[in-house]
Length: 103
Image 1 (tube, one colour):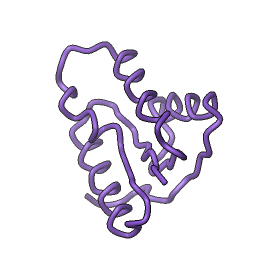
Image 2 (cartoon, rainbow, N blue to C red):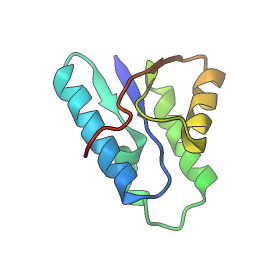
Image 3 (cartoon, rainbow, N blue to C red):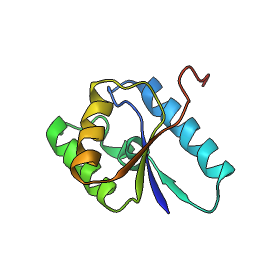
Image 4 (cartoon, one colour):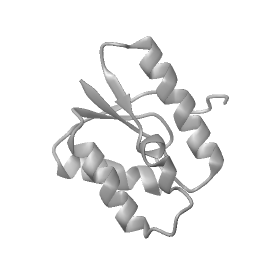
C-alpha cells in the first residue's frame, strides 16, 4: 500500500525536518507499505518562486497515486487543504499521534 504522509507545510525548515523524521520512522517500522510525504518529494521546489496553488496541485497528483492519507500532526490550514482534497477524492484518512514529537 502506498501511504501519503500529511504534515503541515508552512515553508519553515522545521516542518520539513519533522516530516522527514516521522516519515522515516513510519517506513522503518513498516516495510510492507510505502510512505511518501509531499514535503520530501517536492523538497527541491521549496524555495523556488512557485505559486502555492501550483504546489498544492502537485500534492494532489501525488495523493491520487496513494491508497490512503495518514495525518501525522496538528491540523492547521495546510493540513486542512490536504484533508479536503483527500475527502474529495474519497480516500481513506487516518490520524496518527506524532504531535509534540522531538526532532
